[in-house]
Amino acid sequence: MNIVQNNIDALNAEITIKLEPADYKERFENALKKYRKNAQMPGFRPGHVPASLIKQRFGKSLLAEEINNVLQDSIYKYINENKINVLGNPLPKDSSEEVGDWDNPGDFQFTYELGMAPEISLNLDKSMTFDYFVVDVDAELINKQMKDLRRRYGKLSSPEVSGAEDMLMVDLVELNADGTAKEGGIFSKTTVSIEFIKDDAVKAKLIGLKIGDKVTVNPLILSSNHEDLARMLNTTHEAIHGLTADFELIVNEVRSMEPAELNQELFDKLFGEGTVTSEEQMSERVKTDLQKMFSRDSDWLFKRTFVKEIVERTNIQLPDAFLKRWIVMTNEKPVTVDMVEAEYDSYAGGLRWQLIENKIIRENEIKVTMEDAMSHVKSLLAERYAQYGMNLEEAQLEDLAKKTLGNREEAQNVYDYLYEDKVVELVKNNCTINEIKMKYDDFVHKVQHS
Image (tube, rainbow, N blue to C red; front, side):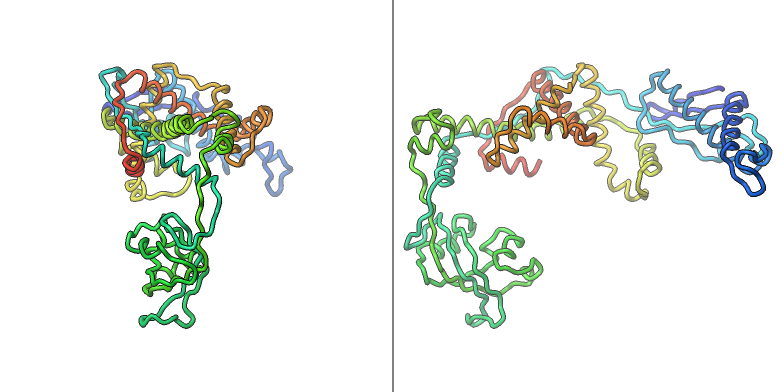
C-alpha cells in the first residue's frame, strides 16, 4: 500500500491510496468463506454452495465492500498518525478517477478529498476588549418591583369607579356601522386589564367607569396580538384578521388589587421569617435579587455578543466548496445544493465558533467533570421545582439529575453549555471587560435585537 498526500492549498488536500492484492486479498477470501457458510441457493444444502459459484455471483460486491473497509481503515490511520486536523470526513473523488479492474482485480488506486481545519491565531489577553451590558438597578426599578410584589400579595376589592391599574369584567358586543348590536355578531364575556392597554386614548376612556357604563372601542387595541384577542373574543385567529367593526364594552364589574401593607407579615412571606424587618431592608434585598436575576441575562447576552465578535475578529477561512459537498453527501435527509447554499452561512458561523471554542478549551486545559454536570443539573431542578413551591431533598435532586444525565442527548447539551460557560468565564477574567449600564427597557431591546 502506498499513500500520497497532495496539498492543494492551506484548506484543501487530496490523498491518493494505491492498493496491491496483498492489501486486500486475505480479507476478501475470508469474506467469501463467511458468506459461503450462510449462503442458501436452490439445489445446494445450506453452507455447501460451491466457492466458485459464490465468487461468480457475489465476488464483485464482496470485493468492493472489503476494499472499502481497507480504504477507510487506512485513511483514518494515516490522518491520526500524521495528526492532520480535518473538517468533516474524507470524500471520494469522482469514480472516473479510480484506477483498477473489478473483473480482474489487481492493483487499485483511489483518491479522496480532504477539507483541512484552518490555523487559528487567538490571544485572549487584556489587549482584547469586550462590552458587557448590565441592567442599571436604580430606584425606579426597585420601587416598581416592590410595588409589583405588594400587588402580588394584595387583596382584590370592588371599587365603584375604575382606575388606571384596575380590571374590568365586561361584555363585548360587535356593532353594525350605525352603532346597533350586530345580529349574529361576536359576543363575549371577558376581562380587560386597563394598565396593559398601550393606547393612551383608549385607556383614558376606560378610566372612571362604573357598573353598567358603556363605551365604544376598537377591539384590536384591547390586546397586543391576535392570539390574545381571539381568546378574549372567544373566536378564531382567522376571524380576527377580517375584523373591522367597533364593539360596545359594557362594564359588569370593577376589580382592583389593593397592595399589601409594608409590614412584617409581608416581609416574612417574601423572604422568610425574620430575614427582613424594615422597608429599607426590603429595598436592599429587592435590589440584590434583581441584580442576581439580571446577571444571568447579562451573561447570556455577553455569550451571544462575544461569540459573534470573536468569530468576526478571527476572520477564519473555511474550505467552503468542500464543506458544501460534504453536507450534501452525508446529510441524513436528502438536501439539495440550493438548500445548502441558503443555510451555509449560518452553518459556517457555528463551525467557526466551534473551532475557536475547541482551541480555547484545548490550550487552557478546560475540563468539565461529572461533578460539574451534576451540580448544574441539580441547581436547575431545584429552581424549577421551587417555582411551584416544592423544595426537593438532596437525595431526590441527585436521582433526578442522574436520570437527566443518563439521557445521552440531554447530557451532551449540559456538557456543551458548561464548556461554553467556562470559556466565557475565562474570557471575562483574561480580557478587558467594558461594563455598560443600561436602563431596563434599553437592555430588553438589546437582548431582543442581538
